[in-house]
Image (cartoon, rainbow over all chains, first blue to last red; front, side):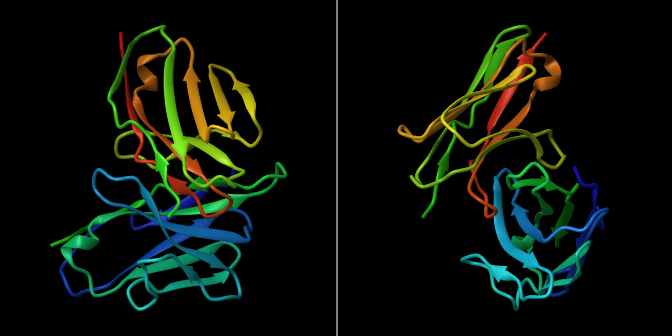
Length: 116
Length: 108
């Protein structure tokens, strides 16, 4: 599977500020995804990021709060804007792998965000 | 609203036993089903995928799918303490819907 890295691995931020999380893949992938995992919860899809088009957001998530960039086939960023303590979560990027002929997803190591 | 249901556990089994993890889903047209393992503080790791009814085996892991009953399960044979983790069931094509996970504890 692809090797996925995320930066930063963790951060502590003040409310009202913004944080940009980077996701880098070691091979070209068409589809990248951003998920959130709140404390003690499961994963929730925030948005799908395709290269060359605007990100597609899931219900409950908006571009003004979570702007996403996808400048090429190996890189994406997620910004968490105007943060509040409720944004404290683990943010994970994943990539779609179709080399076996079916769609599977592999996750990066995640970014643990704490908002004070 | 697409839903994926799992018993949160913990499911406790002794070392060497078979652990059985279950998952039900609401979207009848779902075609792709995945099991991820998540150790505490780590990201989910894909361990099994299944797309058609029946069993799929990979080493000590067997995934079972019954689309008529909207049910997917994961069996772990010869459970080891290193299998202790949270197991997440995920359903969907590209846009995955995750269950809340079942915490498995394997005691030596």
